[in-house]
View (cartoon, rainbow, N blue to C red):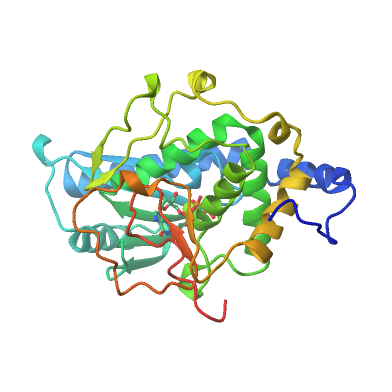
Length: 313
Ligand code: GTP
Ligand code: MG
């Protein structure tokens, strides 16, 4: 456990904390990059409306939760509104039609239609340098983006930790679910779990105003409830004094110590969540999952975010 004698533990975390903070500053996206992303978002929105009628195009992932590194991809999700005149189409048809329309525009390059992915998407590069993934009607992605943004608002160490771990994983080439390693989203969940264990973060999915029962707010069959009123969080939860003293250096050390020597990979479910809020309905294990590294999605409780991990990685 944490309290055992640890011969590797540095006597001071000052230098690594200082370096980490400088590094985070450097890796922040510049305002100019935000401007290019907004312009691309507007362009995609115009094209979607042209193809399908009324539509909403929302950013999610790191462009929506404040956890982007400089030069990060942009994830966007299209919502069609069949009641107000736009068509309702299947995810595969959506990918085909928007993909074919984008092919005709010289501003977009490397367009890929991933129709057979778990969540069908179009991948592309815009000539202004932004890489973009376009998904469809994915409400849960919007909600988990908001959940991560809420965690970031609780403590500024969340962003610093995420930025360092993301850049570490990218440089080690272990941040690509298509080649058998974890997605950025998975790394963010790993960071949140460690910060919850250290008392830096609460579990927002179990906090209820007035201390009542956790409500069930349905989203695609899952409970998307979490406590989002961060300005009033201190009425229901306080960080431990010890957790407030922990520097980025020490928390980074804890991250690596925990996943190197404490986490039991074969039978330990990484869980930023409470399983008891799972819908009571059919909860048979999903056999198609590999269980080398189990990371429970905060809302989609039967989705193992660690599933892309193969034995080698
Ligand atoms: P960067 O693109 O590296 O900046 O990270 P990111 O924070 O945008 O994460 P990523 O691109 O991995 O994921 C984008 C969003 O996809 C997440 O915030 C989630 O909303 C959604 N998502 C939900 N489930 C999954 C999953 O299993 N894998 C991935 N990759 N994304 C998921
Ligand atoms: Mg992303």
